[in-house]
Amino acid sequence: MLESRNIVKKFGSKAAVDGITVRFEPGHVYAMLGPNGSGKTTWMKMAAGLIKPTAGEMLFGGRPVDLESRKEIAYMSTEPYFYAWMTVKDVGKYYADFFPDFSYDRYLRLLERMELTEGLKTPELSSGMMAKLKIAVTLARDAKVWMLDEPFNGIDLLARDEIRRSILEFAADDRVLILSSHLVEEMEAIADRAVFIKEGRLAEEDDLEELRDSRGVSMADRYRAIYGRVEVEA
Image 1 (cartoon, helix red, strand yellow):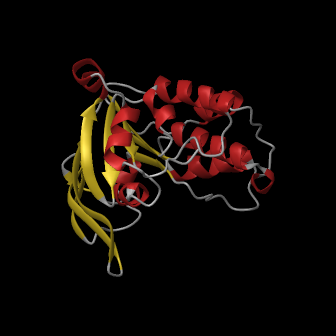
Image 2: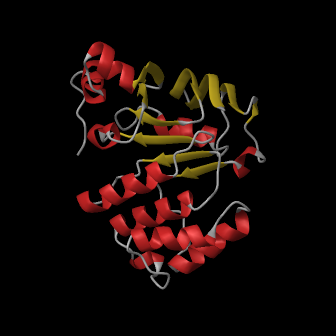
Image 3: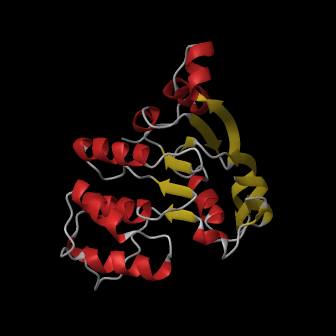
């Protein structure tokens, strides 16, 4: 459904993404893993159609990613992207105006789970509350592909449990979920496929069940083997 073919993105002379070929199929939850700066966010932004590749192709349904594909791909960035005047209710109305697949009823249910209320003002939200708001408004879209960039950053342990349950609820045979993170242990309980990115390149792809059953290793084990002494941030 979503794939990149030898995709490259350079900023000046530096290649943030350097020739990644990878395919994401419906019915799976993918962990896109790698230390900060490995190229995960840049790849996602190209998949979302927010930045253009320097070379290669980014395809959705066999066609180049464009304005039309944005209607099917829901992307949650790491950066705050709401206007300072907005309340939580305004955020939902803003999304409903832009995305025909946005469900306000689903948004309200997700807000309740995240313990957020419509009257809260976005500038007054803590980093954890903002992270939960971004997840709620993204998952409220009835998209074919959901991409969540670092969804657990700034969120406490109990809230992470609720977010995991919410993410898994929306996993379906005709949908793709891609979660980018450097918090490997959090991803182990959610994903069934792993894509390891190292220095802008694809280092490895794994079916996690096969990895555990056939090779007797976990996703965290592979992370340590691939990145060696690279420090995993808490």
